[in-house]
Image (cartoon, rainbow, N blue to C red; front, side, top):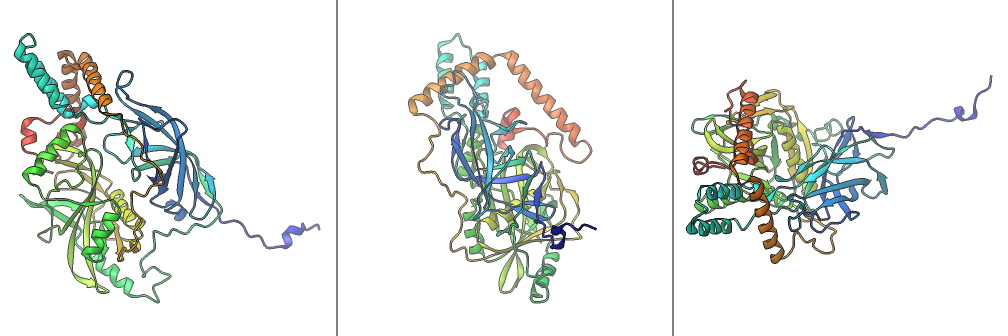
Length: 503
């Protein structure tokens, strides 16, 4: 009997870690890219801000560098050829920390901004400047003026001058802008990858014998309040999903390093800024947040990560809890993502709608904090009493796997900032003042020729009504208002809605 020689030796197969096609890859740009100044072939670089997992193993750890180039660019320029900008990015390489590059096949599926949208083929499209609420309202006002009269002509010029600050139509993604990619082909690596971000609680099985105090923390986590409550009238609202162990100063430093800011109280000046941000489709980093209660108390800290349009943002409310763990304070938080405006909903005439998959925002907060290097550990623990499907105080659906993210903070002495960049020089966002003036006039005339007539206005109102009816059909099974799914971009808010505005 012939025995092949290699069978006499033990076989040591490579440990292959694989992420299948369709896996999400969350990155943060370290180079700026924009439709005005970027050219086809320009290099693009980003860093992985959350580990890529495959069958429970880390395939790509956070901190891996993802790179590629700009494929195609469509700039608005003076507005003669294009009213909107477009950008095609190709990411085709990834390098693990301390390792060489590996081929990557992925497509952009989401830009973590409010104004840009991504098509099915991965192309990023910008906004039409004359689609803003302020410009639309001015159009309706001008339609009501008698164009044959001199005073009406003068009034028209004044109205147009009032909207000189049109929203920026060029796409500009600065360092720190976040994108989501989807693998279009499976990614396999034969080297083990250790994730420096996700270090488990001391009570994980391998540490349980030497650190039983971790089990105490799990028991504390299980005893935390699971629900927030809205006021006037009181009703169940957002689920709690993040537990932070650390001081108020550590929380402030870590969130600041991660690019988050503290929400400010609602004042007259902030209400005016809020209204301007809505009309001009701008961001508002420290926008006020509505009040929610835990154990009858309002949040001790409200933090948010604003985007380039006030209609969307990441946010979390934190309540300091009684007692401590290992001499450190305990903070329970409710993290949700605002995805649009909603109107005439239970308890609120005008407020935000949240994304139903609240676990995504929970993980977003956890990984943002861990990426700064200001955390000692990060883990998730289950809670049997949390409902998997529920609704918040304004009727938005919420789904969850019931787990609580538990984050332990340190003193954050040398944080890794969310805006780190490898750019040697800033990338221009748009042209000079003369070009901006010419672009505004060209886009205004172009839009007026196409849309400043009652035929288009009728189409616009019809489209809005169809959107309302569709939203009503989606929400008719529950107590949500029939206007809760109304899109912010479909029509500007009425004066009544604006008067009742509340973040």
